[in-house]
Image (tube, rainbow, N blue to C red; front, side):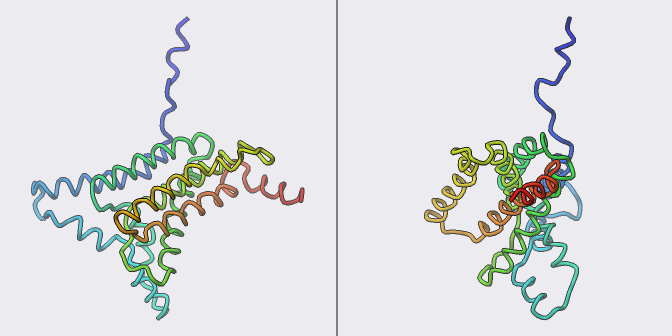
Length: 227
């Protein structure tokens, strides 16, 4: 009886997670090819140009809000910034993070819900970043979206432990550890305000989970009625 062997020993990654990281991988391949000079009309400054066009500029966004002159580019960059990165290493970390967390969350959430968490965390993370009057650096990279998935992952742990469990606060140990690392890096190398978008992304992911988790909205209503 061999029928047990053809089952996947490892659950395959949900398709939606690959769809989310595909644009990141494709842009990195384009940058790598541009650097080799193999593609006519492409040059090694391609990354800088793309970061300028697709990155999210908080100053420009605040100006657009102030003068109420809506233009499409600042609105598009609320999301496009999540798919361009400062370096191959920056992109690789985001891809690994997104694949790992997307796998955990995707085992419980529907594909559309995983995408909703990542994209909402990216957009709302950038919005919160822009609404802080002191942010000036262009925001790039998928960390706010990845942090959204950490939020959903934390929500799953928190729900699994259930109310009344004394260890429930331990669901937040991962984000606590990341916050600690950010503090250490900030102290050593100077803090970049990116953390605002990242931790906003985490909060969005956690709160969105109440709505997009299987039976989430109904579950939430039931809980509220019990009160």
